[in-house]
Length: 91
Image 1 (cartoon, one colour):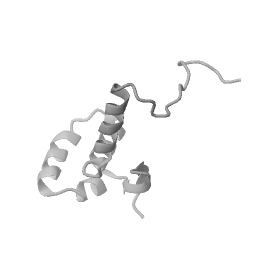
Image 2: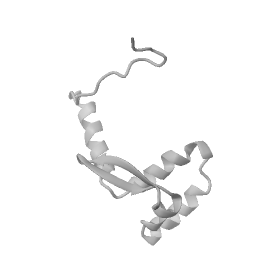
Image 3: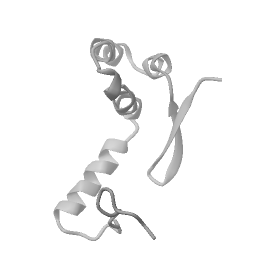
Image 4: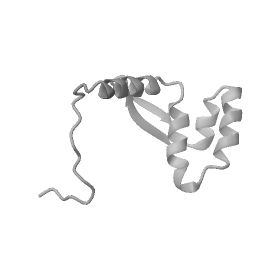
């Protein structure tokens, strides 16, 4: 069984491909060419985030994020809570 990643998009649990090969296999030829050019040069520390970004391409997650950022920019309460400052401890 291939590795997968899970996330929530539009309120639904979505499984995404979880390997470089599986992410690439889900792309059309033009996207795959762009992916190949980029992925070879991604520093190891940035590889997970880059792979997730490519796996999410075309899922509508970007639209969902953009709508949230627009709401935040308008000052709308989106139900976010403060996670605390770095290094803070919860008693």
